Image 1 (cartoon, rainbow, N blue to C red):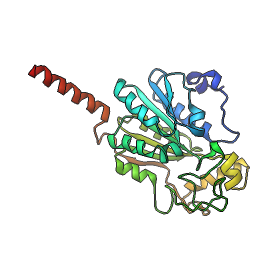
Image 2: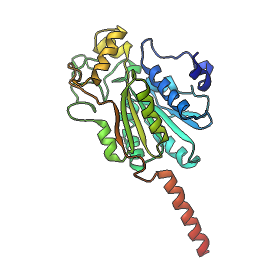
Image 3: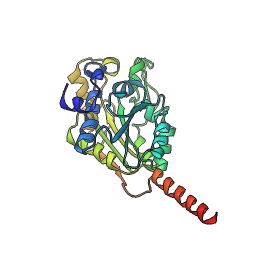
Image 4: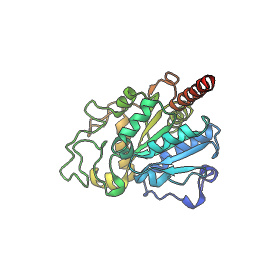
Length: 280
């Protein structure tokens, strides 16, 4: 057990339940490094987890307060907690691509619209890998999966001129970033900015699945080969096999440009109480 795990995670949850070669551990560690470098403790953070691989990896690992919201509902729970908790308490959510960009998308958009002070870390493995490797909302078009034996026909949120982060920007998010799980301090720095932001932040982290996406879609279980394929998505010329190219780093930074929802709501409530007392 390394020092980060010993400091922040429950011993009974270590080692991870993730498959060998899975990039989820890299994503999880980057969040812990960001928390540590910000000088936060287990008392400062409430950690919420979604469903699927990302949820199973991170649920109840945090030594402090944590919760789970299945099938896209983690954002609704976080909204209630944000209004109820002190402003200085940090709320971090680790979710998968389905929880973020599929069944949970409507709740996610409302968090962005409100500029709710939460940090969402999306661990994206390009499909529903925890239930057998079905294609999802970010699976590259044309790729074979367990539920698309002749290749996916649907366009996703990350191809053909469509980018889900643009939708979130237009919805009102005040900080957005994208990285791969292989990156080092630059990815940690984006997560730190997201946590420190008093508003809605989302960091999209793309990571490899060896067990399903690698074996079925890429026809390989070789970890180095699969990692190189995913890393190719961030090359300047993109990944020739997918036509996808992602820019690393900060996608949108509008920190401080909009009022934060919970703080504004509390101020408005105090104003109403004061007016009621004056008119009593």
